[in-house]
Length: 257
Image (tube, rainbow, N blue to C red; front, top):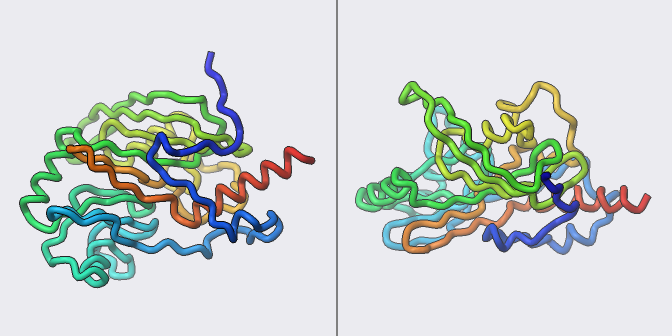
């Protein structure tokens, strides 16, 4: 028998994620919030720099590297302009444009090769948080092969998840992918019946609206751990922190009524 998690927030220390409610938001009554939290802006930033490895925070809406569409901002160009990063700076791995969080870059060919081998050999540990539709089980493991377009066949894919809190008809999950297939978390959670809030590509055509929807994919890559034990963290962006506060306050109001 699967137990349902308790409603309300839980500490995120076991994920390595910081959850700090901005005081100005935490003190606001529910009626003070706008209909959404899209006015809160997240910005790219440098998390760490060592041995040719650059660790950057990517906001939702940014591409990792330059695309054919010049209107789309990208982290690679930002780092070169804002941080005077070398022209050789290149991403070691990918992160969906709509997902926020930690991205590793290499400043030279040696680091690019070394970092690429970490991912190829499965030596990198990644942890995400996601808000999904539906009330998820306390924890679970999803083992479902996914199609790889480059190889033309299905490859093994494994995703672990844990429900951290319930907010009405939504679940707040900690997610740990054990493999790195394209859109793995989004596909696996949709296949489980819990599409990510804001995912217009893989969700069902009709899903229940979420109060205060922040206008973005509700998926954040919060922690990356590389060989040697180095751990890099990107706290929740302000629009996601504010949205959790809104959902919590709405839940508290419902509980009191």
